Length: 273
Image (tube, rainbow, N blue to C red):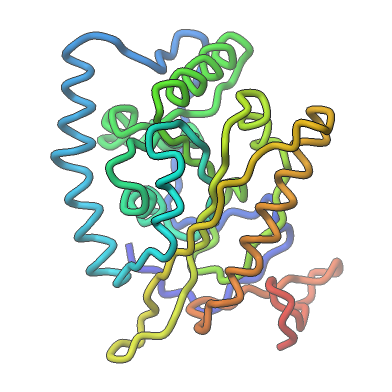
C-alpha cells in the first residue's frame, strides 16, 4: 500500500500509531506455542524463511528502497553467538525484510505485536518466519521468555523495535522506554543497533534507505539490573540519534500539536518549521 501522506500531526510520540494497516489482534495466552520441535515445523521454517522470504526480502528492499547496509562487518565478532538487535520503526513491510539483509546468514526472530500473527494469511506464516508475539497473560509470558532465551542460546538474533509504533518515513529517533532492554541484561547478551536513514537518490524523487550498523554494546555489570537497562538503552538511543542525522530528505513531515489541539511549529525531530 502506497503512503501518499505528506504531513502527519501527532500528539504522543510514545503511543501514536500511523501504520495504514488496521488489524484486530488475537489474544496470546498460555496455549500459544512459541517453539515447535517437529520435523515438519522445522521444514516449514526453512522453507518459508530461506526459500521464500529471503529472496523476496532481497528484491523488495533493493527495488523499492535501493537499500544499502553500512557496517555489516561489525557482526563478525558474534557470528556464532546470539545477540539482540534494535532498530527504528519506519516501514510496515520493509521493517520485516531489512534486518534479514543485514546479518545474513544469521537467523532473525522478531518480537512483535500480536497483530503480526492475526492477519488473514500471513498471520499463519509469520511464526515460521520468526515472529515472537508479545504475551497477554502470565502463562504466555513464561513461554515467551523461554522462547527468547532458547533462540539466543541457539546463536540466533532477536530483533526488537523499541519505538513499538510505526511512523512511516520518519527521519528522527523517537524516545522509547528501557523495558525491552530487560532481555539482554537478563541473558547477559550483546546488543547491536541499526538506524535506517532516508537519503536522496540521483535519478528518483523517492528516497533510498541506508542502514547503519553499530555495536556491539554490552550491559554494564557493575550496575544493578534496573540501572543496567537504562544505561544500555541510553547508549543505544544516543547512537541511533547521531546516525539519524544522516537523513537528508523528508518524505513525510511530522508536526506535534500543542496541548490546545493547535498545530505546533516544531516538527518531531526538533526542526523549526
